[in-house]
Length: 107
Image 1 (cartoon, helix red, strand yellow):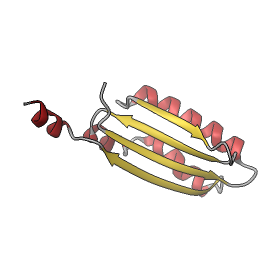
Image 2: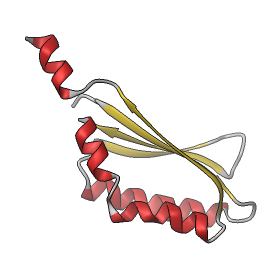
Image 3: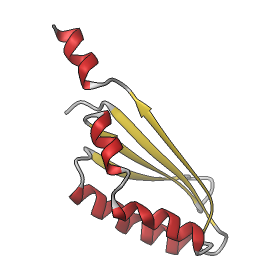
């Protein structure tokens, strides 16, 4: 399956709360991988900083990625921020190609 869009979340855990954040985010990704149309959600640890991770979601279409942003499981990121477990978080998304562009190129 082709990837048409990617979303990322860069997470910096508060010192001493890395394990808690890692466990919560891993659980969130398990739920998202089984309840969304995402091709895959992955969690990548920063080898030089034990309290930094990047979550990446790979989507078959921009519309599917955009629709998932209202998924209730994503509230978990804000809960971690409000609890003080995350000191910094950065969201980003990238559109590689919309389905319409792919169809035009093939035609």
